[in-house]
Image 1 (cartoon, rainbow, N blue to C red):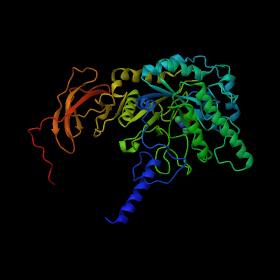
Image 2: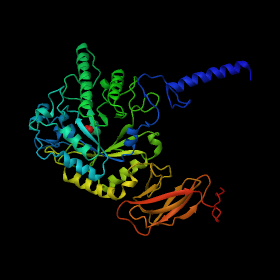
Image 3: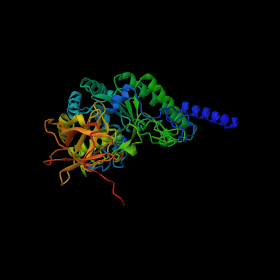
Image 4: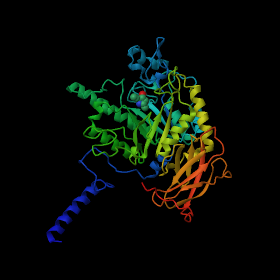
Amino acid sequence: MKKQTYLILFLCLGMLQEAIAQFPGASSQRSSVSLKHGAHRLGKRTDAQMETWRNYGLGQFIHWGLYAIPGGHWNGKYYPGAAEWIRSWNEMPNEDYDNLYKQFDPKHFDAKAWAAQAKDMGARYVIITTKHHDGFCIWPSKYTDYTIANTPYKNDALKELVDAYDAVGIDVYLYFSIIDWNHNGYRSGVPESGDEKQSYEAFKDFTANQLKELLTTYPTTKGLWFDGTWDKAWIAEAEFTDSLEAELRAMRPGLIIGSRFRADENGRRHFDSNGDLIGDYEQGWERKLPTRIEEVHGNDWDCVMTVPENQWGYHSDWRGHVKTSTELIEMMTRAVALDGNFVLNFGPDGQGAIRPEETKLAKEIGEWMKVNHEAIYDCEYAGLEKQDWGYITKSRKTGKYYLVVFNVPISGALKIKIAPGTGIAKVYDLTDSGNTYEPEEAHRSKTDGNEYLIHLEEKPSQPKVIVLESSGEKADSEVLYEKAKT
Ligand code: H76
């Protein structure tokens, strides 16, 4: 090579190094626009707190606020929307809604009972609405009068909940809505006039103050779950939101914040202008789940799910399909099998009671979890081909595979394809390790992996977990498996 070529190569290398230093973990192929307020980290967080988060498997969401009082009805009329949005309904005058706090006196509220039920269900984290879009705070915020302190109930319900969940070992995350219909500076559109701008500045200060107040007052909480961040006004605040996020993180090392908090300077949300995830995990899986691992792009994520199609806060009259515990267990397993967490929503009523339908679901999920939690906790995407009979998860701690069976084929034979170069050491029921299976080898391939059939003798009545322990490659089979010539 000529000297000149060496020089050019050397220069190129230098530029590449600089680019990599700017975006640690970035591959040299990454197309990149330079961003001030894009992702500040590429790839998954590797610290202990995030590792804990990743391993939760199952969480609980709680939507509880003033909307629980009307419970989806006003003046005898049925509100067809999501109960927590009732204030935005023409049939409910704002003034009526804004006076509901005078009636907030939940006689049946028992934080310890909620926590005990969540624990029994198998939840390992909870996300609690501290303030929904209506602006009502279930903690006595010193930055507004629109709080629980000014209701007949008076007490700090958030503190009661944080203490109760902490006591049973469920990690607490705080839901916080940026939309605030009660604050006079709040705007959805970008403020234009000087006055508007000024009041929006006051709203920004207010928001920052409340967030700092929450982190200071509830120091055991682990993260913030943001909502209502899709407004144009908020999206236009990339610089402010980025520096606020940095401040919050500095206040609480390890704090977990998802991809919903802030946009980059081009208004891109969740994923920045380079396609990189903003925040610690993807927060776009609301009332929907991915079907393929490619859809989650190697990121952490959680799915938040309602029991009916779209009700979060208490609605006394659920219409449409109401999910069963089996459906929810299947969704949870699918989430874990695709590297995510599953968070099930609860909407306690205006008296603070959890409705019987939710109590029943919690109990049924809990019964399943008591026996099968090994397939959910501390598990990840197994890296094996998806099969129609259900989902496969893999323990991050032991490397065991869990075959969670939801649809037994009429043949009774469960196909499994394990990685090339591995064999099967042992296959058995999670509930009874003495009940073993002799997998039948169906195909072997050095490139595609080895295929086996696990024959079930009877059709289970519940989602069933079979444990598979893999081993190193076993001796070549006598049968010759040839590739078809076509
Ligand atoms: C729209 C919207 C909000 N985001 C969900 C998590 C609920 O809080 C719903 O009201």
